Length: 357
Image (cartoon, rainbow, N blue to C red):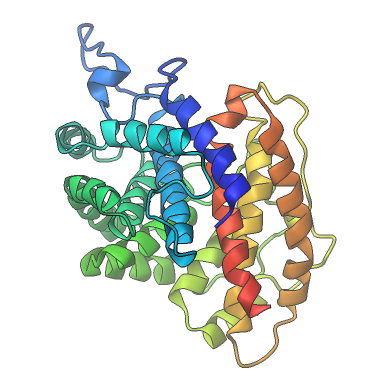
């Protein structure tokens, strides 16, 4: 779909999957002897600085391959998985992903998730199930095989999600990994694609229970110095998945009644030190906002009446996307181990919006 993006992102994925260190393990030691290496704990996802980043780097790699295979079929080209990539890079990407997404390695990952039921909740869970959905829906048989290998992980996460949402009385509302709305939004889409009806129902019920009555979001006050998510836009992006278009448009009017073009919620942000792993989150904020706005605007276009928020949101989209994509030129690992996934997500959402404009 995006040949230049495919080439760039394939290079990022290959670089990340080849970097075993530095790695932030987030493993809770239970004794002085409990000192496994990252590859022992996570034979599939032990590179790219941390587990969740490694998972969504695999999602990015699968998404790149899916895109170029689909583009090749649309053009009537041979289905070699390499359209938009040179043959050697496409083969290298397939090989790196296939080496990690084996049934044996993923069984170890599923076991770890089952033994550590709140670990990587919900962000890592969401990217893992999204990876499984991207594999399962692939036009390529080899990639669909990786999806079958991931089914055990999906089984575990689906159970953990249902158990968590059954007892989570309140959502987490901030712009970091544990943000409830962002995680549940990705989980909901992926579970729908995978036909996991019970998990879908749990996600939809949680979204309504947590957010349906929200109004008057403080859009001028949500930004902090290490956000990579807009808490308000994450919530809106989830609710557009759950509510019919007219209900969503009415909900958004109540939620963001004072939204303006100069709102801080929509402003481009910069990074003063790209080597700082927390400050660099702000590059991701530009990209995640762009993707979320594109999806919200598309949902508003399906409503029967015009929304006052739509032109305000639409006007912010291009500057945010432009700033976020410019950050991809950074060569610092604090940027490269994750930003490209958010760029691809934003570009996909922009492409889906274009026919509706």
